Length: 97
Image (cartoon, rainbow, N blue to C red; front, side, top):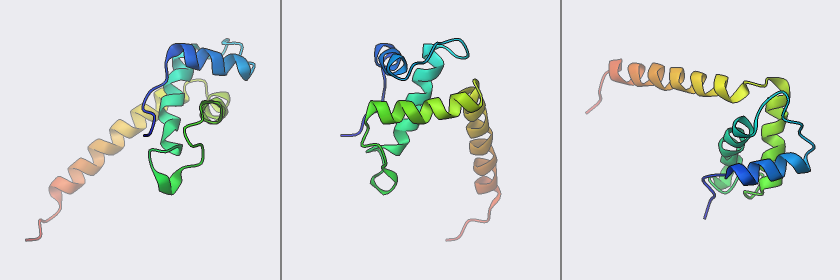
């Protein structure tokens, strides 16, 4: 069964293993990133690269947060905008019987 969540304690432990100092982002931002990156695990066998391994998942989240400390805030906003855009397009498209 695919993992769906990461606890703050798990995120902190993984971050400490990776040497994160928590100066650029906090444990909660990192935890949110790990939850997002679980999409690369057992959630979808076609794109599974981590097998829900928390250390590998944490490394993916860290890579994004090292680029932009607010990466997951920006991702959330972009996904909301994309969902609204595609919902509107679907609503406007002609329905086929």
